[in-house]
Length: 398
Image (cartoon, rainbow, N blue to C red; front, side, top):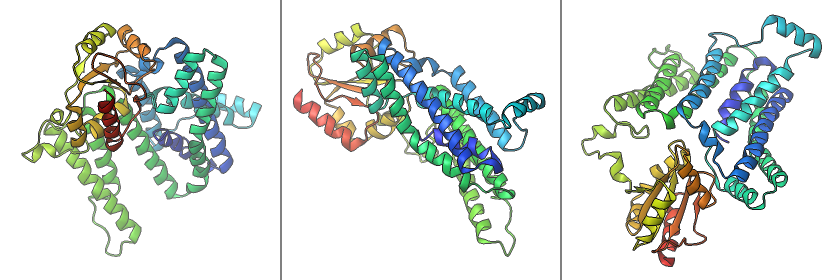
């Protein structure tokens, strides 16, 4: 739920001086209830049908539209315009309810529902277990109730942030404007993060560069400080300088052809190697028939990795786990297969359904000859040390 915190915080910050404890709690609860009901409904549907519903939303058009919503919200935080209901409608609602909390609550509720589908589409281990249970029992009522309660538990940190946000935010004065602009930047960052999996890598790199450089200028990174500047002025100027240098590094790295935002200047060292050189080579299987043929011919243990371009945890596995030297050394003893379910085709659904999976990431190990090694599945992100132990167990039981 961490990516949802900037969204909810931006909603609370947008209330300005009205962001009280009670209002923050009410808006946070509306957001979390929207998320919880979406998890319950989509989870039951996925469990009963065996399909990955969120995959249909992971394309450039849907994610682009959702990111555009955050851009529109962020621009209102910067003061370019004010988002509000028409005056006539405001007056009518005012007569009936005294204020606009109900209407805004519905909007926040819908934002929570959309966030559940789009911001967090990857299948974590607890959610995968819940979905598997629903699929095996066929009890939609019990399954929906379990997912609803689980989502409420996931929403507790969000409610805590939203409730505390009302008291932590300044109530009036220039500080309030500064906080609103800060949350505007966070909403823009959320928009960039949303579209990163479905656009060319250079696009998010350039966007991150701009998102660091422009706020750095507003933090007076390029302006001289007065002789008797206070400590906070120096502090924020220092933050601005760091952001400016980081953004410049991202911009130079992107223009130089590098596509790794964590190492933007790697290509300028002269000894840099293509990013793919640090990753093990996987053979793609596109259907159950291809998988069966490959497993039948295997003379070594096999590792099957379920992957999708829009799955953040899959990218984390590639970036932090598969690229680890010790992991690559142990993977050399395995035949590496990858099921790319990005498009969610009929074959993709068949592969997922065959192993009772409802989406990536998921890793399954097979002994030579094609029999699955029971009890060693990896669902969700796993760091290098834990994954090495899993590989050792698989090698020992193959």
